[in-house]
Image (tube, rainbow, N blue to C red):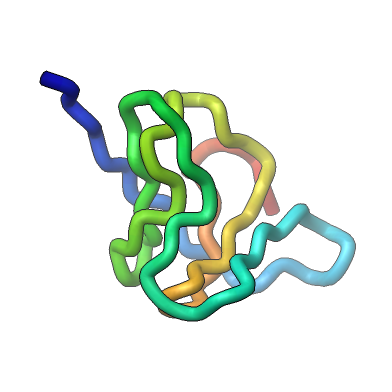
Length: 82
């Protein structure tokens, strides 16, 4: 049986234009932005929505995600994204 671990992302202020790559999903609500086939889910640090599903640990870095559910800006902790 597969065990998927959940990692809470860090909520950050909205990045200034031109300072970060920001992924924004076009639709509002509880949507996943990236889906993989590994063993980690990355959750919004504000509302716990799954933003990245089944992604390998360390696969995501230097990118900011705008949560499609609550609008919070998130980054994977310790990756250096703005």
